[in-house]
Length: 348
View 1 (cartoon, rainbow, N blue to C red):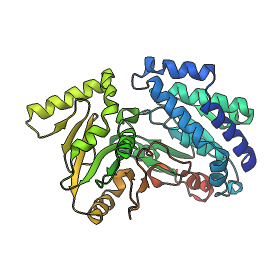
View 2 (cartoon, one colour):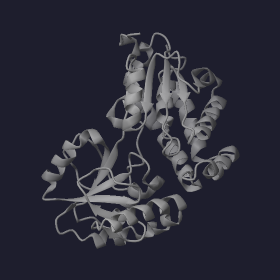
View 3 (tube, one colour):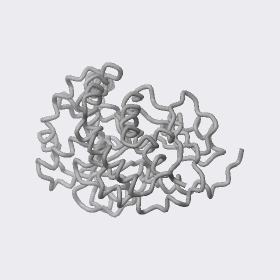
View 4 (cartoon, helix red, strand yellow):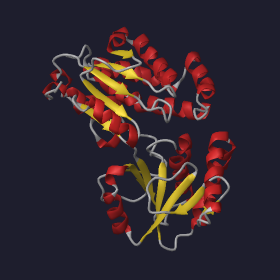
């Protein structure tokens, strides 16, 4: 049984949320120095990730989220191995949060790209309530676990399935996100779409890697709206990717559009290289919905200004990186999985 009541969890997590929304000196130091260890983790990106989590951990949403589950059903804490990704700052925090909320113990295999931030945030949580200190451990290698949640690439997922297939598990593979443009968007809406494309340099699974556009759509309208993001090209690593992909397209005489910081290329694929955005034309919204349905298992979310009849999560322009607590990765309910581990028959 969880050591915490739902009310205690809401109190502790919401206090953490307030602290993350107003970073103290140690956290500010991390915000400003993470780029030394990982060049992609600029102060702006780290601050955005921290404050996004702070906003997520509000009392109202925490109550709505936690009250959905019967946390008393967990008869004894389980050891949950967590293999965290490191593509964007604190990307694995939600998995850790779910383990703590369900009264289980998190064995955290942090990514070398993002180990310092998650340790600092959990230190802040244990300061709020010392009982949390007994609910997590950082490990170099996963051993003696009852279940596993692992996030990685399509290649690493095969490794995960081989080693962790005999215990209850959630194994996540590569996913991308796309946007549906109707042609009726305002310049402000298209500017907001820029956040979905460029935030975290496009490294997240919730970043837009492809847009669907109506036939005869004027892409100059799109380029004009995202012009304010042009300074992204000043980041050395992003610039290197942009330059490399542009060279590949030029050498291969591949048709593409270029505004000097983003390359647009018509392509059926859902997965575009960094600094490249693929696009495809659609005849009508029904056709766009059919394409999204076909690619459902490869999509994390879809951004659109109009309602869509699809299984994928649909959010408004500019909201792909503002998930709520119940917006689970790959649409797998992590809390339900963890709260009901006692029902799984483990094969050793």
